[in-house]
Structures are given as structure tokens and as C-alpha cells.
Amino acid sequence: MTFGKNLKKARKNKGFTQKELAEIVEVKRSTIAGYESKNQEPSYKILKKISNALDCSIDSLLANDYDNYIVSENKISKEILNNQELKSLFNEIKEMDSNNINFYRRLIKFIEAEK
Image (cartoon, rainbow, N blue to C red; front, side, top):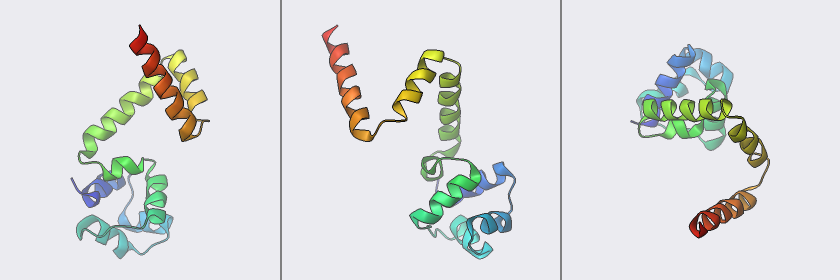
């Protein structure tokens, strides 16, 4: 699936018209139409605004299979929210920079390999 098709699905899921999304993102309606139907691609700055407006990740907008990606994203969110240990771990990790996250990932793999 293309970015344009994903954008259109995400926009409709949120209940926005092209004009409404364009106003939020501060572009012309024709720009949104171009993204959806003419394989035009936004700048990163605009992509970020679209993602925020539609309350979805940039990854989901760029995914090959939008529907499965959203299902997977929602499933992971629910799993974290329903498990206090995962929720606590997630809250700690989200405050870390990528170097610390990578360090702990390698440490976990090392510990698992030593079992």
C-alpha cells in the first residue's frame, strides 16, 4: 500500500475531510489530495504534522500494510497497558536515549544467552 492510500484511510478513520486535515496541517486541500492520489510525498515536517493530526505514527502512514500495522500497534499498546510490569518498564525506557536503550537490549540478550 502506498503512503497516499494509508493517508486516506487514516484521515477517514479520524473522520476528517481533506479540507479539515489541510487546515490543521496548514497546507492547501489540493496538497492533501496530491498526497492521496498523485503519489506526492510530504516533507518530514509536514509528515509529522499529519501524524499528529491523525493521532497515528509516521510508521503506520509509511507501512506496506496499514491495516495490519494498526492492529499490531493497538495490540502492543493494549498489552503494555494491561501488564503493570511492562507498563513500568516502558515508562523507564521511554525516558532513555537510544544509546542507553541499545545498551540494555544487548545486556538482556547477553543474559538470555547465558541461561
